[in-house]
View 1 (tube, rainbow, N blue to C red):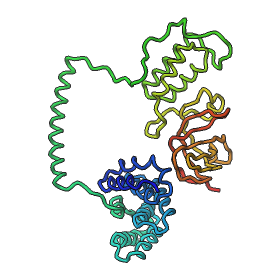
View 2 (view 1 turned 90 degrees about the vertical axis):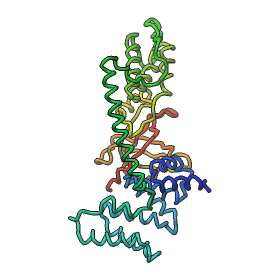
View 3 (view 1 turned 45 degrees about the vertical axis):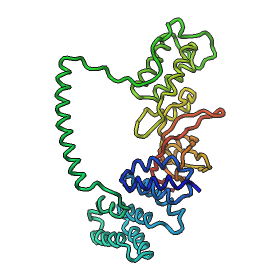
View 4 (view 1 turned 60 degrees about the vertical axis):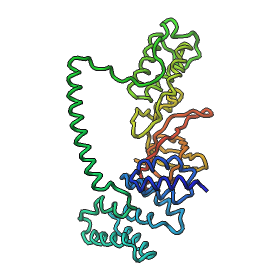
Length: 367
């Protein structure tokens, strides 16, 4: 049995209105709680509170699959999801299911009353607003009015203080030179080897560079790193590692790799194309890809999920390429699902694949 203390703490965070904190505490534990309906229920409700309706629906549906009795909060959350997409018939059905269990359930009664009004308005109606749908979800503690008053007073004080500070700063900038821009932390870039030490003799290299090209490649890697274009930096590093660059140069390039960030949808990076990776996978090892396609040959294991991504198949009958993908995080997936995969190129046993770091559901491909 998974540790229930984590779920209790996450629910406390939800009740305090700290939805992001609750979500963050749970998302990395999906494998541990993969058969726990309460885990997916809390995840789903947090997603709904944060405005992620698609993710919330996915988690709540999973909770419903795992729970024979189906928790009331799960049904209320799904009722809100159905109402938001204007599937009022499904929303009414869910509300009636709650009333079948407890005819006195006031939330379900109020929800059904609002749904009747929405049904009467027809397709041209305004629909149900976010505040109304939020009332169907489990409540959380909001700051009281006194606290809001004090917050307002403190806010006014801070604005005044900020204005004074800004004035002082502006005065100082007239007599002082601006501070240098922040430099991203990484290995020591000083002391680049002299030009005579930047290349080595030999013909067994995948990339052959001149001394000046080695220097320029290292400069491009540094600049990309400082500009937070980590995929571009990794490409330049790989190019140096596969080239005739000298051992000191390669060692210096290799020390930069641990400082590169993992691909993240919140931090867009330059995605390499399928043709680029397919042609030279070694040069693109560790580089970011962000590709969409149809999911096939899905295999869900205890520690990882693997599938083939049919690139371009979601837009027509032609498959641009078939790419093996590996996930080490849990996700609710099905064959024929259209997904956008964010990840890195990896080399293994003489072939290349994508190690996914994030994934977005884009629906299903029509047969």
